[in-house]
Image (cartoon, rainbow, N blue to C red; front, side):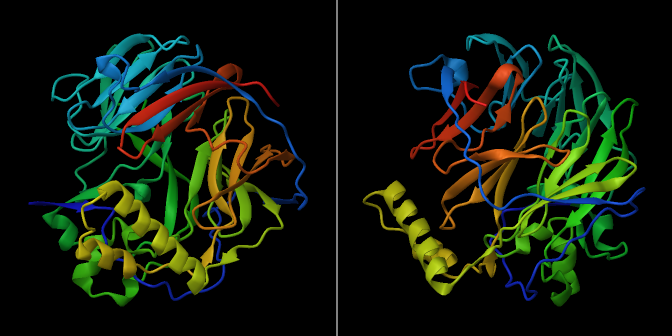
Length: 418
């Protein structure tokens, strides 16, 4: 028997803890260096040159995307776009001019076909790793798109989940955070084994050089208290593998990316804090800017609920919004404060872009640019750009846009500024 859980479950619980709490690496090998960065923004200028667009209604049939969740570049500047829609389940490789080079994958159970692919990672040399939830393993493709082999997860777990993945440069390995998976599959054994409630996000390194993956923990990041400890055992077992489903709206989110040297940059608090972690050592450096989280007042929460209701009403047009959906939005719980950091990306040369929240919960703020060794380079003012979905070599950047009809467009640009 298996039970499929959806990580976007409606159930939420009000968080009873206040303040900010950090979990650092489990066993750091050396002292952590703390670097305080300046609080005053230094303005950076930025301009983009648009190179091509994919997914327009006037485009080719292959680029009518269903659900592009991730894009990435290889060292040659080719873009790889992963369409996770059930009818597609394909990776499209596009050259620097926006022309289709090849397709990879597709639904099926044969070699190199996907049963339910949920994540993609691209190595600098062009090799591709695809996480396939239902096949409990990872597909590996070479730089020419040819299927190499399948790497299985070890053992027969009573529950398994696959979160987002990123390639670790210099190794046949990926970095992943399983607890950020949107779903989990559980067998009957998951309901009879020991009950251990989650207390952190585990940032893991998975070695894919063998027939089965081997896992090591890079760092343990903060998981806000979910309220699971206050639930009955049946609810605890149902949500133990996807505890984020129980968190209030706008709860602090773990943001993480892999640096060119294989280390991990991540943010796991409500403050402006970026941590640098490496396998075998844990967190080795902490970068901080003196910004405080914004209290989520009743006025701000009311404005956010009204914004969501208006958005749904605009989509439905003349059709009345069902009372059940309206009630779900009205009854949503919200975290007590808004985190400073909204997103994080890493450029091809290792600069860390840190997106701050704007003045309102739905707005974008400035993007700070820092280095892993602790230098603050400056900030792009709010409305200069959104955070790219992926960076590539020579200043390439890809953005995923979705219009009011749900049509997706992938836009590739080149940065002209510093």
